[in-house]
Image 1 (cartoon, one colour):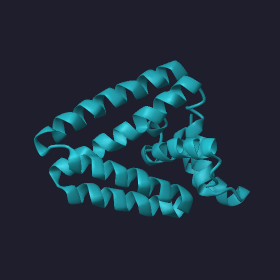
Image 2 (cartoon, helix red, strand yellow):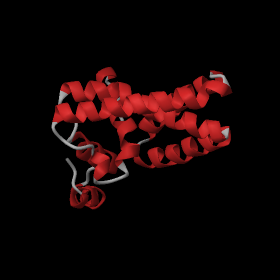
Image 3 (cartoon, helix red, strand yellow):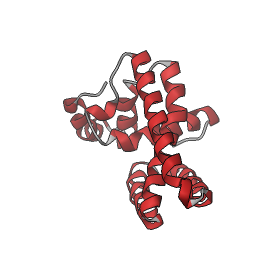
Image 4 (cartoon, one colour):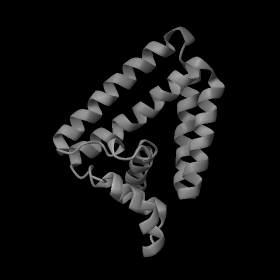
Length: 160
């Protein structure tokens, strides 16, 4: 698991070693995600959490969800254009699905998905025997979706 000191070194260490920041962040994140069952739980729960979070923002105002997606995509593009493009597709699909959910049901659906997905995440980390990475560095809340996308990219042999 990346500690606060380790996570601070992620950005600084990557320049010294020549590694890209995205690779250093994904490696630091992966330290607490080595168990195959935990990885599979993350493949399901991380997108579900992102979807439900966007759903809660959408319930406040759709522009709030679009703004968060846009800001996230700027961050992702600075790390890796291919991963940012994948996140654009995933985020776009989530926003389309959110637009299809009746407004009267959106908050309930989002809250239920959010709670169930976080329970899944903590079950995965109990299986792993390690605490979630974001406990030490909040950046990892944004890196989690990239970890899942990177997992899928590697399976599909897509370079990022």
